[in-house]
Image (cartoon, rainbow, N blue to C red):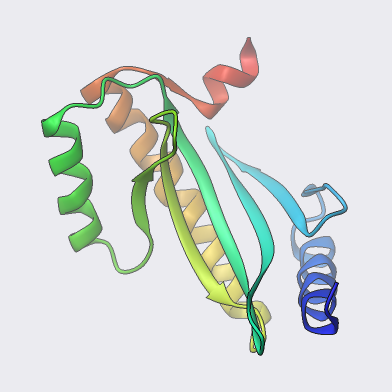
Amino acid sequence: MSALLEKARTTVGAFLAERFPDAIDYGDGSYTISHGSSSVMIVVRPYTETDTMVELISQIVTGAKIDEAVLRWMLRKNAELHFGAFGLLFDDTIIFSYSLPGNSLDAGELESAITSVAVIADHYDDIIVNMAGGKRVADLEMN
């Protein structure tokens, strides 16, 4: 592992331990934080030779009926939101994600990004389920 990646993972891990003590640490530079009916996965990855990337990903709804109306709605929301974007995983799980450069990461910036992704996911999961069906993360965890 590069020194750059190790430094970013150490920085993120220390920050999460301090500000989000309930975060689950998987020991490989990835973490999960629960918020309301959603959760945010934080992953520190290599990006370029001189920087890393901190990805914030929230799985919003799985099993939704993905049709043109849902896709158009997600694209319109992407244009309205200040940062981050809705997307689809390989199995059509709807996600919301945002990425930050890891080399110049600021604790306040990371905290704001985590909180924003969590709040957006928690807000829109109910809307998407009402529009397209499927299950929220919280619904999956109950089973």
